[in-house]
Length: 103
Image 1 (cartoon, rainbow, N blue to C red):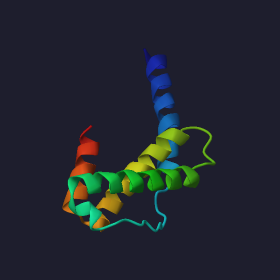
Image 2 (image 1 turned 120 degrees about the vertical axis):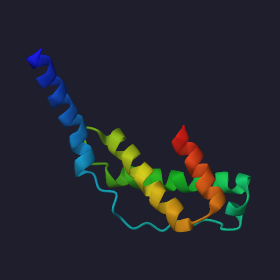
Image 3 (image 1 turned 45 degrees about the vertical axis):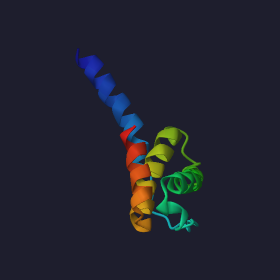
Image 4 (image 1 turned 90 degrees about the horizontal axis):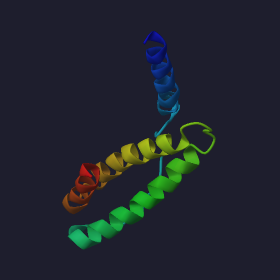
């Protein structure tokens, strides 16, 4: 039983290590059409475009990670999208983001 717990703890720490080492603190210019974010359809289109840009940037920021790269990129994208949506401050874009986070 002890060996199983130790192995599980070690595996968890190895998986979590990249997340602690990852940084999502970078500056990034995001272009968007504010008028488009006023409608549900436009907000969805802008969100998809912005999320793609953010995901590419996060992947580039963490390309040197050999273990946990996908996990770290996903975490970076989620955190950065939270910041972007908050900065844009569009009610429709916020709804799209909340729906995506809800699943």
